Amino acid sequence: VVDDQGRYLGTFSVYSLLKLTLPKAVLDKHGLDNVSFVTEHVAHLAQRFGGRRDEPVTNWLNIHEVAHLDTPAMEVMLLMLHGRTTSVPVVNKENGKLEGIVSFWDVLEKLTGENH
Image 1 (cartoon, rainbow, N blue to C red):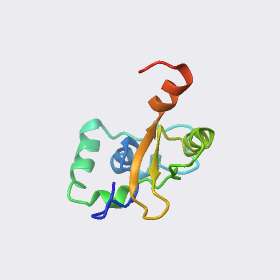
Image 2 (image 1 turned 90 degrees about the vertical axis):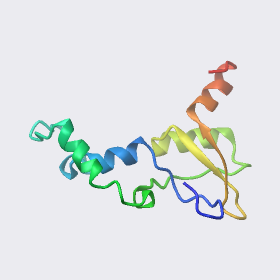
Image 3 (image 1 turned 60 degrees about the vertical axis):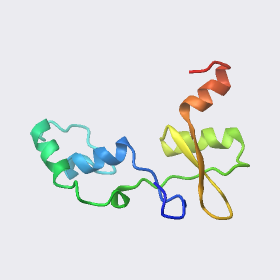
Image 4 (image 1 turned 180 degrees about the horizontal axis):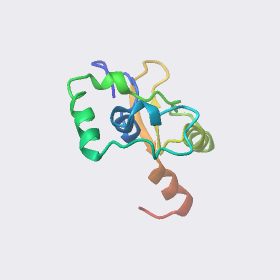
C-alpha cells in the first residue's frame, strides 16, 4: 500500500485478512496450544469480516523491514526469513517511494535458474 505520492506505507496481506477475521482469543502473541474452545463457524468469521468492510485498509497494514535497490540478495532472504514473509518491499532510500517487491518466487528463480 502506498500513499498519494507513491511512498510505501505497509503491506495488506493474507495475514492482515486473518487478523481482521479470526477471534482475538486465538491471536495471542504467545500462541495457544489448543483452540478447540473456539466454537465459531465460518459464517461467524464472514460476518466479523463483513462488519469491518468500511474500515480503511491502512488500519491493518503489516509493517515489515524493507529492502533498497542496493540491498544484497542474502540480506533480502534474511528479511523474508526473520519477518516470516514471502515478499519484501523495495523502497527508495531518498523519497520512501515503493520501487518494487522481491517475492519468494524471485528468490527461487535466482537459486534454481528456472522461471516459475
